[in-house]
Image 1 (tube, rainbow, N blue to C red):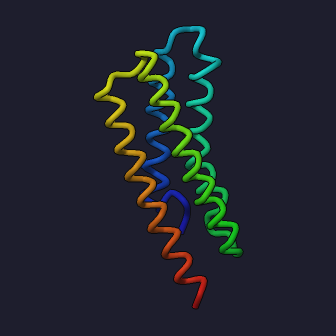
Image 2: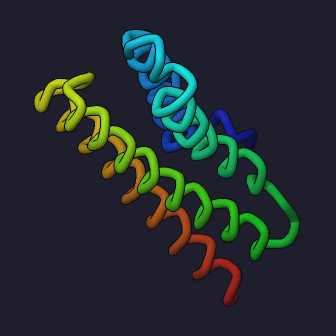
Length: 120
């Protein structure tokens, strides 16, 4: 099994591309401010899942999942700021937030599965 076999990884990967595309529409002065923060946090979420994936030490994998959850929360925050600055419509914000929340739930399920397996 490889990380690309995880549905949550693929969803987060796709969201990274969509967030990147969104940030390229921001005003030029925001490309290296809010845009950069959004690109980094959205990319860090699947990267952390990938980093911990398959590690023989379950705790390292769990830490990657935890960091990924934090990056999701940070990304949602930045998206809300982009919305408040009128760079992102309410409708698009809601779509992104719902997708990230779905990924967060999937990561929670993965975490719980790893914890059950680790206790055996």
